Image (cartoon, rainbow, N blue to C red; front, side, top):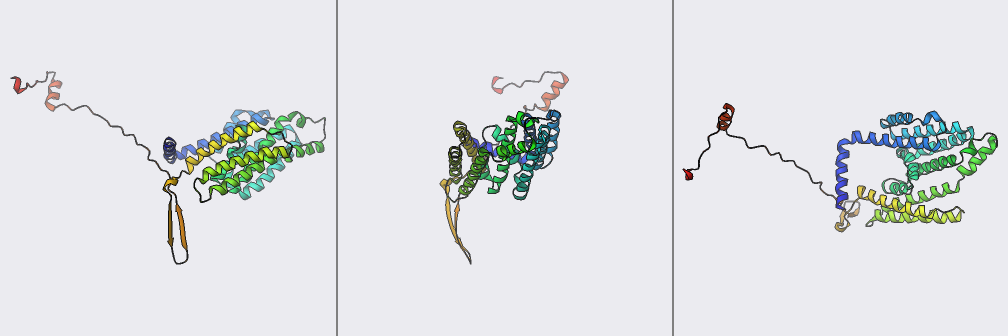
Length: 333
């Protein structure tokens, strides 16, 4: 625990000193990974799959707000969908339009979740997103989390059914649109996941704001259990094949990451809790004060040891090429 707190303080000092360089690098890395993942998942237009294009777009995103990376990602997806078929492009465009209306009117400051959530699905730990946002965000963060979840399921479904969606001979346009609506918009697994993530985020947010000891830890545990229960029992109720092992392992790993986030953001020493009472002309106050855990980072000091300076007479003799006169001890004379 002490080691983690020391690393936290060192990271704060590092970010405070080099934030002007760190944050552009983080935005560049996030955008580059997102663009390369999109090209790998639905790279239907060959010219756009060039890594150089993703690199240039990521460089632009490093100097612009993080929401621009989400916009570039959406445009990249639309172009790839257009290369696949007009029907897929139309459904994707309509879905993105609804997301834009919901997102920019409610939670514009959480634009990074539109990128982080699909990437978390790719890493098999999407359950960490609602836990983390419940600990550090507000309930409106559930909207971009839901939008990011819908984007992942859309890309995943299109990638698995490329042959059917790209075939222009076996089905007509209305049949393709109906097929897409039934399997993308009305996807039971996607709707269940969005409901589970929304419930988890709200539960974690409500519990971690309670005035109880270890509220953040309790919030992580309750949120993880609620997420597992909703996903597993919801899968049984909706006749969806449950991914029991994946849900359990992913939830446990996500809970561990959420605990690390708690240590980095919110570490309290409940053993030194104090209760204070005071009043003014209108109110009487009962205050619970819990001190934060702070630790001093040890500073390394480098001590320079300079060689002993020789007397001027000795240096003068050495410069003239003569040996210095050695003084004899009076006792040996």
